[in-house]
Every structure is written in C-alpha cells, then in structure tokens.
Length: 465
Ligand code: UD1
Ligand code: CA
Image (tube, helix red, strand yellow):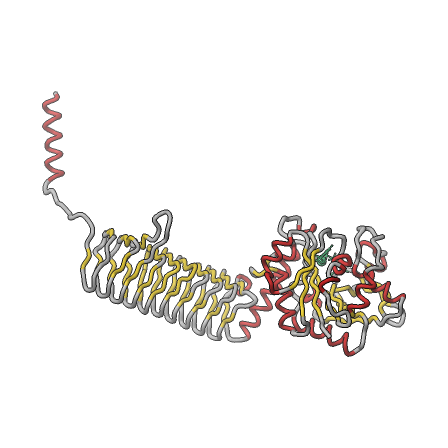
C-alpha cells in the first residue's frame, strides 16, 4: 500500500497583493513550500509527494525541481478542484493521502506523523487536523454535534455570526483514503459565496455515506498558521526565527540581541560560537566551534571554520579555514576557499580562489580566479586582472610571496615561490622563483625645479611691464 502527500500550491495568493506566487515566498530565505516538502521527507511516513501547481507554476517547479511529482490545475477553481487534479498521479487507490496547503510553513514533521498515525490507529476514512486559536478570522470553523463529533466545516465567508464565535478551526491538513477521496470530490459543488469547489465540503459528502470521520487536534496552534498576506508572512517568519534561535542558544550558541539575528532552517552551528547583531546565516551553512560572526554579516551556503572572526562582511558559497579573520567589509563569493590563519581585511573581495595558510590581504584588494600558496602577503590596492572583457583567466601564486601595494597581476600569470613584486608594478609576464619583479617607470627627481620655475615666472612678469 502506497501513501501520498498532496501539497496545494496552485493558488494565486490574491491576498498577498503581489506578483510572486504565494507558496514561493521565502521565510528566513527559504521558500514556504520547501519547508513543507522537507518536513514531509523528515516525517518519512509517505511514499510519494505530489504538488499541485497552476498559477506561475514554473516558479514553484524551479524551487522543488524533481524532488516531487507535479499535478497541474490549469484554472484555480478552489481547493477541492485542486486535489481532484491529482487523480492521475495517485496510482494506489487503496492507500491514504495526507493533504496539506502550501501556505503553512511552520508545520513540523511530528504533526505530519501524528496525523497519519491517528488516522491509521483509529481506522478513520477521513481525519481532519484541527486546532484552537484565539483569532479564528479567515479560517474554516469546525462544527461539532452535541456528542462532539464533527458535523461540518464552514468557511469564514459562509459562517453565521454564532459559528464565527467558534475557536476550533480547520488547519487545512487532512488524511483520507484515496478511493473515497476522489469519489467524494466529484460530488461537491461550487454553490457558495466564492463560487469555488471547497475541499472542506467532502466532510458533508462523506457523512451522508456514513464514512468514519475523525479529528486530530493539534496543541501548538501556531504550527498550523496559514500565511495569506505579507503581514502573516512576517509573523510566521518571526516565530520561526525565535524557535530556531532558541534551539541554537539552548545548544550553546551565544546570541547578542537575538531578535536581529536570522538563522536559516538548515544551518548547523556548533557550541561555543558567538553571533553578534544584524547577522544572517542561511542556506546550507555550517559555523564551527569558537567562531565569532557579526555584527552586520551575511553568510549563505558557506563553511566557517573553528575560531574564525567574521565581522561586517558578506560570505556566499565560500569556505573559511580555521583561525582566519574576515572583515570588516570583506566580500567572499562564488567559491572563495580561504585557508587557515588568513587575514582578509577591509574592502577586500575574493571570488573563485583558494589560499594556503597565513595569506594576508589586509586592505583594498580584488582576488579573482586565483590559486595562492602559504605565507603570502597581498598588498593594499593590488588586484588580479582576471578579465579581458571576454574571458576570465587564472592567477597562480606560490608560497612565500610578497606582493607590494597597487600591483596589477594581468592573468594568465604565474608568480613562483619566494618572489617579491615591487609596489606599483603592472605584471603581464610570469615571475620565476626567488625573483624581484619591477614593472614600473623609474623615478626622476628634478632638483630645485619649483624654485627655478617661480624665478622664471617672475622674470617674465618684469619683462612684460
Ligand atoms: C483553507 C481552507 C480553510 C482552512 C485554511 C487553513 C478551504 C475551502 N478552506 O482556506 O478551511 O481553515 O485553508 O489555512 O479549503 N489552492 C490551489 N488551488 C486553488 C485554490 C487554492 O492550489 O484553486 C492552494 C493555495 O495555493 C493554498 C492552499 O490551496 O496553498 C489553500 O488555499 P487558500 O486560498 O489559502 O485557502 P484558505 O482561504 O486559507
Ligand atoms: Ca490559506
């Protein structure tokens, strides 16, 4: 028997009032729908995930790629209509599906597991996951009969005044047997205020045929929060931020002013790390023990080594070796692989380059497409000239090299071990081992030049009068 997860992500997200499809919006720099897919995977309770896409489907597909199967809902005629679009993707009608909206980023793997377990153990045909909230505005209300059994789900727009007083809401998560799901979906209509096919109406249809319908009530209601507008997105992100930061702090990570610190869902931080304010660490980043990160720093998809200090800097898709200091105002990007005990200082940019141990570029430098050895000093204002307007070329620098200030290294170029590059040189030829390379004009001092010039000017003035 195969079990499926169905995620509804075809809707326009009209209440967002923006162009991006709602389920693609990021929280902590990760798209909403990606959280749901990941937690389904972590729950490890289903065999296949089908995502219903429609409005701007390419944006959602570009996020999830071939991690999931897709069902297309060409016209957005409601949540019931969206699930019906999956019929061809669900091969095993004896299995169950867990249906979830794509705008519920805080849902966790445990809730997914619990809902499926409850459904199976209690032998329900349909299980609705409900929760109790202080402000139920916008959600479908759970209507129970006198014995406490579920009678119906009534959407906010359709609810009477007294139904709107009900605090128990439909989270939008359902577990249901596939064979009865698609039969029921074909029986619902769109005779309601929105003119949509509501998935919630399967409750009424299945009740009429005496199927066993149960509920599972989620205690932590915030996990079921549906994000319908940009304010709700910021509330959900704030909640996620606090949860993640708390987990790290409890795990031995010090955070100064944690409200201003954003740590992504997949980031690993080892104990004894300190994070300073206004810092973002996202993607698949790892921060190793005794590192100090921030203030005002962004780190994305990067590996920060033990005892690294990184302040006021940007680090993307890069690696920093142990005991290296980065910043203030450094920019590492696109495969900068910085060795241990380096110093990458003020206004230094490094791209697609690797450095050995004890490399120093303390101020104002650009290092692109370079392989650099150990014990190298890269002087203030020096750059690798890696681009001729069409192609990029590599610079190779050996060990124990001193590059003076304001040197231009025109790539492709190789500077061999133990050499010295004179300040102000523009080099376009390789430098052999142990050499001094000077590529600049010699200085000429014209003595008494100023005094002589002034005297001449005075004489000219006299002869004029
Ligand atoms: C829905 C439920 C409501 C529940 C709430 C929980 C219905 C009718 N209502 O309301 O009972 O309390 O979620 O958050 O189901 N979608 C499609 N195709 C469509 C319409 C929607 O794929 O034609 C997708 C959306 O992209 C979204 C999800 O379904 O991810 C839910 O749609 P949304 O419009 O947000 O439903 P709610 O009004 O929040
Ligand atoms: Ca919603």
